[in-house]
Amino acid sequence: MIWFDFDNSPHVQIFKPILKKLESYGINYQITARDFAQTLDLLKLYGMKYQEIGRYGGKSKISKIFNLHTRSRELVNFIKGQEILKAVNHGSRTQVIAAKRLGIKSIVMMDYEYTENRIFNYFSDYILLPEVIPERRLKDAGFNLKKVVRYGGLKEEIYLEDFKPAERFRDILKVSNNDLLVVIRPPSMTSNYHNATSENILLKILKILIGNKNTFVLIIPRTRTDKDFIESKLKLTDNIRFLDIPVDGLQLLYAADITISGGGTMNRESALLGTKTYSIFTGKKPFVDEFLEQRGLISFLNDDKDVEHMDFQHYNKNKIINKSSNLVTKITDLIINLN
Image 1 (cartoon, rainbow, N blue to C red):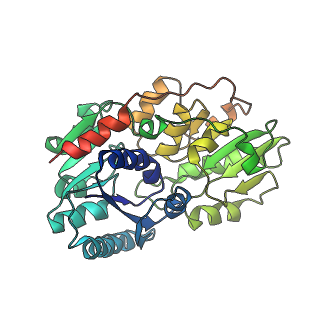
Image 2: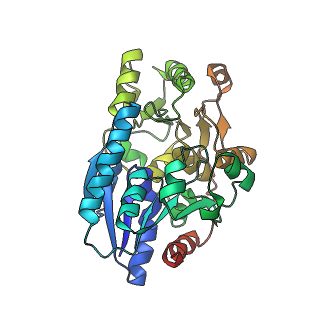
Image 3: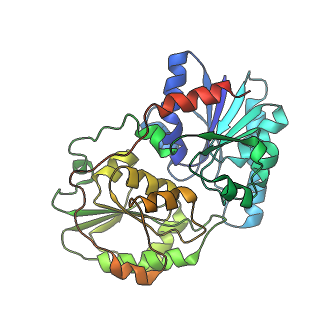
């Protein structure tokens, strides 16, 4: 049995097709999941069986450290005694610690080279990274290159492989095809790489869009902190609301005219789906985002002055979906064969 740990919303999308491929191989798996952002909502939406373990640890460094020890211990207690061949995650620090304690080989997927990587360097057995990130960048960021295993493509292409646009998806949102649909993901205000500049950019964008005729803005907060921040700074109008139901994220981004996000995964999903994409992430830029910028698929907003150059218009005609072929099989086989 292979053990997967989901501690953030994107992990559901990343591993869903891989789990399906494992089922076709007749390989069993176990899912543990943290109650954070929309992780549990998405698991329920897709009817995926999981064991809920742990929750958001809080913004302060002390609470994060405490949660690291608490959740890793809870994972150990749950997994202990099960016949687990290996542990797999995308950036779950608690799982690699738990796996090490249990003597289970662990595979961690990553695509942001500037994350704090000491835990992964020490506790994980393999670190899966996209080939597109130069070795020099990884070395400078402090990765243990002996543990690094490469794969072609980007992680978002794993679940784009079988993507098919849904007809009339905007009806679910009660948004007209004539409206400009802007999807916004606020910057993470509780992460280690938090930068307040992103929040200033976000507020300036929202001030421009408030009350705009034939413009509908849908905000997808990570945590209550994000929502409270926006509500405390602005008096929102009817054309701006928070997403309050779980929906298929890829369908939402494809249906959008513009995506504005402080998170790398959503930016890359949107860009690969052919939607006009603005990044308001102002920390150290991931190489994969720089790569997509070079291809003209992502535009960076580095400060609030850049907002003045944004073009709010319909972009959703004749979209091109960018994706690698057969990536699900390649990643699944890689996971199975790493020992």
